[in-house]
Image (spheres, rainbow, N blue to C red):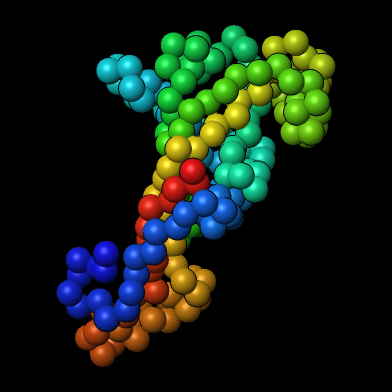
Length: 179
């Protein structure tokens, strides 16, 4: 599907599949470092959203978080494991939305892998705090909005386009299917 903007001379839609989609998710999540983590997706209740730091985005496109087992989100995920994550890496690019399923565990090896000393703010007993819970989000799909050549080139193309009256947009967007 090409742009609905008839003034757009460049191709700006590209769906990604499999490993390519997983790598795009990982790249954009790492640029953003945090996201809005949304629960109550399929429950019929209002969606609940909270900011969370992504501690790891792996090569399979999975996202890893640490949280407290007594948090509202863990209670909500036990009732409805479907989630949506919203990322924004910069003011003009690196946008990503992911939907998937959250899995809850107390995997000590994964806690050790994800641990960093700043987390002691929330887990005062350190990485052995009994409240630490691992959340793994396994994506079922997503959508991205980015630029093709970086923010500097995108800005230059927009500036030239504005000066000459032509739509020059370096954006790219598309569906992400990791399955």
